[in-house]
Image 1: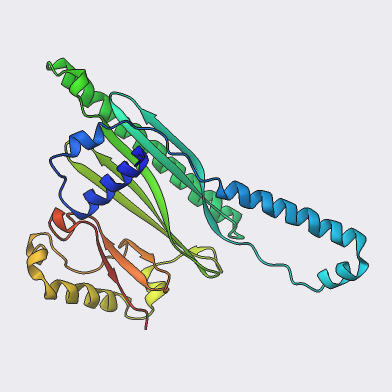
Image 2 (image 1 turned 45 degrees about the vertical axis):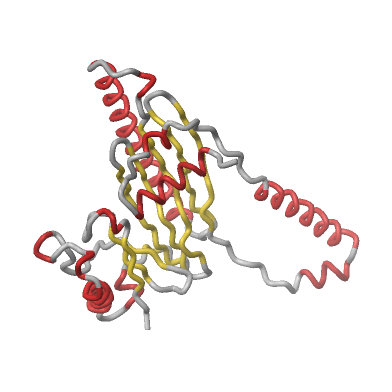
Length: 278
């Protein structure tokens, strides 16, 4: 049986890739129950704790083992993006689904604190504004004679996705998704150099001539199917900006991202262009 969180994920993906379907109201009004989270992380922690106890015990009872262990180099910190907080709210006005990420293990505590505070602040502010809109729309609907039982709650979602995590780079996406009569999404990317603790730019990743390389890749894709994009003189692509959205994929290449409606009609969804480093 499909859970409501899975239905919400299908709805989110459908919005990003196609126009909002006419049957959306029926989907959104389905029961909104919290999905049971996997117990795998807790099981792994228990296993790690047991292994730790066995390791400590071996050190205490075996001088040979202790001497050998002393020769093993200590591994450095492992960067991770974990779910710091998660909550769900279902009312006649709104369906809220939030996962708050937290960056940890980068060896740069100040960096982690800055990014985590920035993410939490953004989610708090955007969620408060979205819930206020949901309240206003509901009150207006009822005030004009609408039946509360027929009201379609506003869907408000915050989630994240790790794009790549290596010894050198951590790249992840924060997404805000909101839908009522129409849909809206906002993508924010964090690309971190784990050796320096600095935020990576396209110039850092692509090197000299970064803009020309990125522009060429995007323009080549547009030239193949120009009918799928806005003309450059009507809000279409005119070149990569210094603050262009991008993430770094598992191959280490930057992927340029354009939001829905940014350079093409909404049916095109979110557009991505991989730029090879070499």
